[in-house]
Amino acid sequence: MAYGYGPPPRPLEEILVALRDGLVREYRAEYLPVHRRSPRRMRRLRRIQGWIRDIGRLLSQIDRVMREILPRIEQDTGHTFRGPDGLARVLMDPSTKRLFWGILAGFPEEALPVPAKDLALLGTFSDDARALALIGDVTLGLKVPSGPHVQEEDLAALCDRWGLHEGRIGFACRRCPTGETLVREKETLAWAVLGLLYVEGDTAALRAVVPLFACGPRM
Image (cartoon, rainbow, N blue to C red; front, side, top):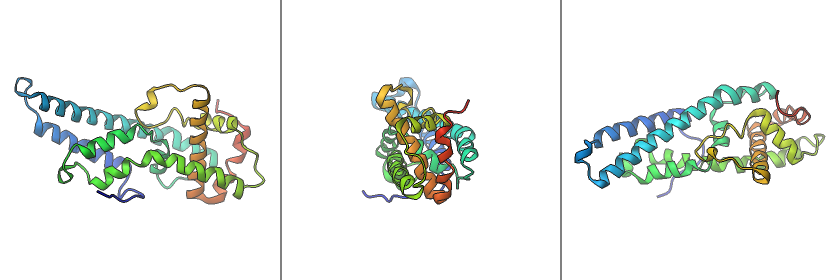
């Protein structure tokens, strides 16, 4: 079955709340006392319960992005984001794919808590960071040619300044990469936010970032 791509039809937080609430209703509808549950029903209820818990964790992480990280970037750049969804998509960890595709596969399409196309779209969000990172990398050099030659350590420092790596949304965030892996992840996140700034704010938003490369992390 094919689904479309692009921006979601309603805010990300609204979709996740509707998804969580729909799963809660489904759990209640399928609930049976322990002594009456078959092994299959037991596994089904545990799976739904896990999905509800995971979506609650995502909502909590998105709330933190909205309260802490988004205002920090806006203050540094003078750019006001169109909404929190763009940054949330940048910070969405690939581990979220398993959640959304698992829910999509766990129900007949007509019984899904939210439309199938919304779930499929959520499953693609973790790819946005790499796409926007490429835009950020290319456009900074083309649109701000007088800017500095950006090194890996500059991007890692910018990532630390904004708290991007600590603000990732998902379930692989509990692992702690080190060395080159950590540097590459920070580099991608920083470039992705630059790409998002360009897409939303054009060249002016990118120019505002250039002085930050000499500032390092916030104290």
